[in-house]
Image 1: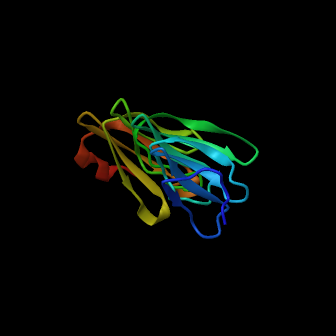
Image 2: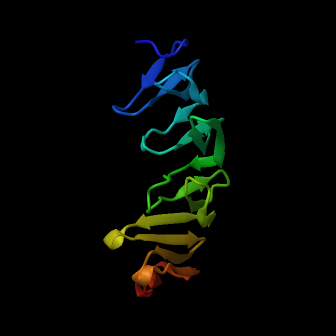
Length: 172
């Protein structure tokens, strides 16, 4: 059964999903399996399909990652600009992983563009104690931490003013 007038080099589809990622002329896009229309035009070096149920896709263009939001009724829009060397975030994930900006600094961002931690750190080590998110932050030789959803659902932030061994004395 043919759903598109176009031919593709590759098709990537999960069962039960009404769309497929398609590769045309070496670039990736996404089509509706109902009528073959493009949800995302094939303009991207890569599309991340880790979370098929989301209406946002991480995409790579000109060597940098960004995030695109799509729907069947409108043109895709960019929610995170294409300026990341590494991008690790999902809309429904409550524990987003650190990402690296093209300025070589690390931060944490959600797929809707909201920043949890600005991209100003030389290193972020992610840890997940007891179902919460703990980020060890480094600027130069100094360390801090950010703990998301701590006791009473309060976020706790300690600026980078500690030596690494001093982190174990911080309360979160």
